[in-house]
Length: 171
Image (cartoon, rainbow, N blue to C red; front, top):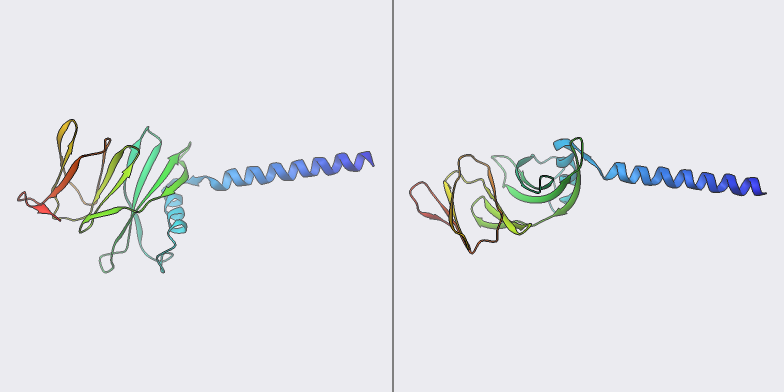
């Protein structure tokens, strides 16, 4: 009887250990392909998400291992959606999903997300050539040099504006 109890306890411990190991392993996401696969699972409000084109447009990084990835769905014939998601980088190109956000639209194909005490910007509008950001340290001018463009401003700005090549505000 004692032997059976010891065997049962050992089996239960072994099964528990395997479940814990599996849970930890399954929560790790490997590489950018894994990050995109996780993003597809988290985006439930788009009907064709399994077949819709999706790319990582860029990322904002804080403390070397906290990343806000910006995903763009759709192609040139479809409406684009811009979805920011936070991941923590672990080791060996592995990531852990933290949170999905709802970016705020600030113009055609321009979105922002408040994150980690600052703002992450994504610009996918080819007419946008610069961003002016006003904070307590004064004005910061950011040149939009490629599309899509992702930029992180590490403070909460008082105001920000997007401009075209002629200096006209983009709304």
